[in-house]
Image (cartoon, rainbow, N blue to C red):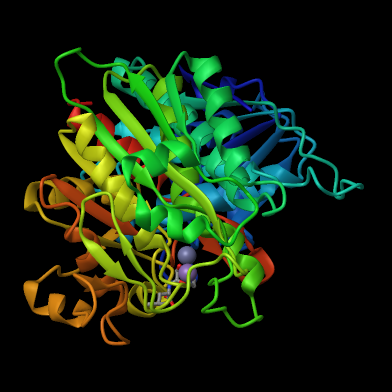
Length: 501
Ligand code: BES
Ligand code: MN
Ligand code: ZN
């Protein structure tokens, strides 16, 4: 899907489908036209108002009405989309409207469309926000994962080109930059979603390393892939303990994008890359275990974010670090009770082999020290407890630096890929006490996502560090089962905001 942005009067848009917004009015009244819709209505000699007066569309946010053959308008179809009540208009109704329009566009025969929503005032957001969320919302709705089905049904949508139509004044540089950002971000989200959706017999640690290789080639990134013997040399006893039960060789992927000034220390993104989590000897129950193929979503989001930033030539230095392996049971697998020595030198008693994410991340965090980072953010489907705490709405945010936490929070709000702060207080640390090593790898049932983060904090003392627990937000279950690509939009916005964009 190709996007463009231009100054365009709605009535003159020669397009397969013209998308216009209307606000919901009180009770029995017809909806209120936006400026673009009113202009189109004048050109159509009042046909739009006349149709709306019939009461077929109240204007509820995301509701739609499709019209054909309106004389006076150059467009083949008019798609009227509800924006909700004007006094309640804001970010949520705007996004619902985009989603509603996208759902209809997906089913149409239209090859192109012009969307007139960018001029709307959404709270205190600038036009760039509308542009980003229009393009991202459309791309997200058109994403498909059908490469493993032998029969593609229903047929793929035909919409090939979308124009973001601006009515008021010329198109600004900010609006153009916002569109470039959105398209690159959408590419990154799509990559993260596809990596997540791929089955665990295809998306192995080696597959992730190959994917990194492809990105390195396409975008001229520097890539290093550490093998088992490198991990042994570095003393990554925790990471190595997790991979022991698996026949798939582990990989530690280090992918560098240098778009910023040479002297700028990099942002390091560390992504949990467990390509399948059986729990190991502390085996998980069978129900929904298939969803543990999504346990590499942190890794997918790191690769997706690098793809996005490199794709838009962002002026930032970012290094992705992805510890990738499988967590399997087996005769060689780590046992509950094993004590391992991490790369940091600290020892860990493995009380539960299913708490494996923190074991691979702690060594990756120690490795990250070598990259002399300005800040480190790790992204992990770390705990079921985080799903209990925050559900599928917010990602859990933990940080040892308030400024970093605030910046991630703001980026998440802007990208509508939201996070919510959780504590890292010392008081929780005693739950990790072990009689046989420096610490245990689990802290019991209470505050499970907090003790997991507190465990990681012990390996991030020398870093400005934040941890995102995406266990509840990285994928959806049930009928809509599939990867969401979160938190790529948050990470891209965060990296750009750091560079003043
Ligand atoms: N990958 C899981 C976390 C997870 C579970 C995410 C379910 C999303 C849905 C992680 O490796 C894990 O198994 N965590 C354990 C930790 C426990 C053993 C302390 C958990 O959450 O149960
Ligand atoms: Mn686990
Ligand atoms: Zn896991």
